[in-house]
Amino acid sequence: MNYIWCGLIIISIIFGAINGSLSDVVNAMLSSAQNAVTIAISLIGIMAFWLGMVKIAQKSGLVEWFAKITSPLLRFIFNELPKDSPAFSNIALNFSANALGLANAATPFGIKAMEDLKEEALKNGEDAKTASNSMCIFLGMNTAGFQLIPASVIAILLSAKAKNPTDIILPVLIVTLIAFISAIIIAKILAPFFCDKPQASDGDNL
Image (spheres, rainbow, N blue to C red):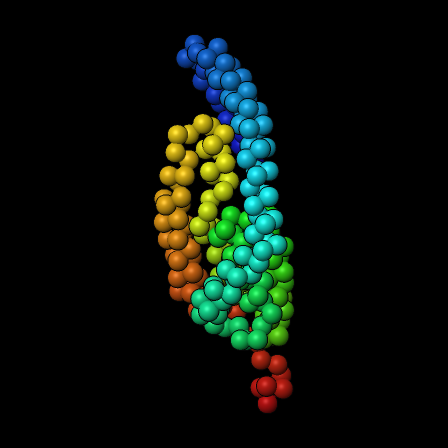
């Protein structure tokens, strides 16, 4: 990524010199750097407020309550897992935290869920170096990033002095819902083509 940014800067300077607008390029770089600092500072108060709301949601049990509601859906999606798998609770908590915009709270749940999914894969005799179908689906869910409350985007819009920052909620909900459903469907469709079947042992071949 550093090479990409460095390349973009060098290319902009070269073309600015060729077009005779090098001063405009330099001014744009300096003003953008100033705007970045201004936005970052203005985000402090907004994010502090939101993190406080996150803590209240965690302490009040809102995240756990939302996880219980989504559990039946997740059991349908991860139908390859045993019904008593400990992965379900962490998957539900991770999904719920992400949906509510609690990205920081979702991370530890996501890591633990992936560890549980790996253990389930090893129990089924799958390759330890290969991601299981459930792991791929879970990764797709997190990449899609379904959100009911896009807190970070709203905070950035507020810091940029947008007139109606909450207008982003419905578009984000629609886009992330489509991405979420598409990721699951694609993972389910492609699973039979990329699934590594557990190899039978010599005893099984007798």
